Amino acid sequence: GTLFDDKFVFFRIPVLVVMAVLATPVFLRETQGAVKYTTSTIVGILYFGWMFSYAIFLRESFGFGGIVFVCFLVTIDDLASFWVGKTLGKHKLIPQISPHKTIEGSLGGILVTIGFALVLKFALPEFSYWKCALLGLIISVMGQIGDLVISVMKRDMQVKDSGKILPGHGGML
Picture: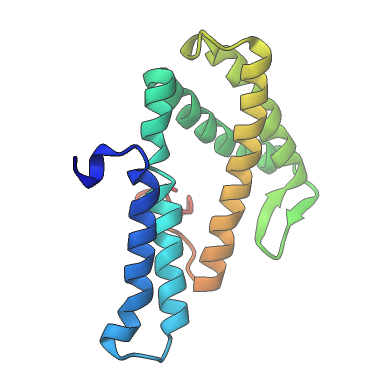
């Protein structure tokens, strides 16, 4: 067998990558900024690379409908939170992290996402309506936390957007 025949390869590769990143300043004989370089690289690899690889597990466990369900709900949550926040938002959520996000937008996003989770139940026929509603709640809350995490990263790096595909949107992540 090869390294990739084992189902635990998913856990080994990130460890090997992290070890290589941590060793890079040693091989480059560089001490200035080594902690910032290695931590930002590791976070980038784990957050953006390894986390997205869970789509494979999602597809294997729940089929293409599972991927559609999650991706659509994350998008709906983002749009609903924005729209409800713009139209009804009065109370800032965490202004030092994301000054335009509101409590009303967050709650509106949660409610709309749960509603769409119930509508999209057909994508996960083996799930009950209660499970779909619970998944909608979890996806909404985790999506909003993820959005705030990206906002913290962007604020720390002093950039406005994480991409240029949709100007003013903040990026595709």
